[in-house]
Length: 69
Image 1 (cartoon, rainbow, N blue to C red):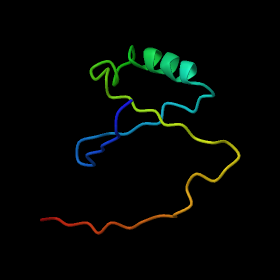
Image 2 (cartoon, rainbow, N blue to C red):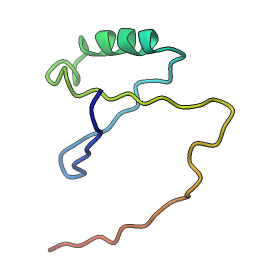
Image 3 (cartoon, helix red, strand yellow):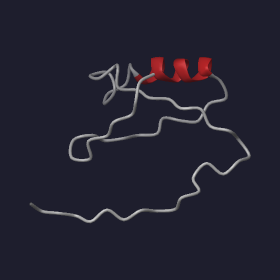
């Protein structure tokens, strides 16, 4: 899978699920591609591996100032 690039103005990011294998990920993507909201963009999926029983988000929240320019 490619790099995840999110355009906050146009993209609507959804977490489909957390899976134990790459095969399970591919099966979930195949199922999601049939659903409304996903079938119009069948190549918009991204997966990333994570270790279980380990902290994956250690940096905390970051505030990004809003600009209405």
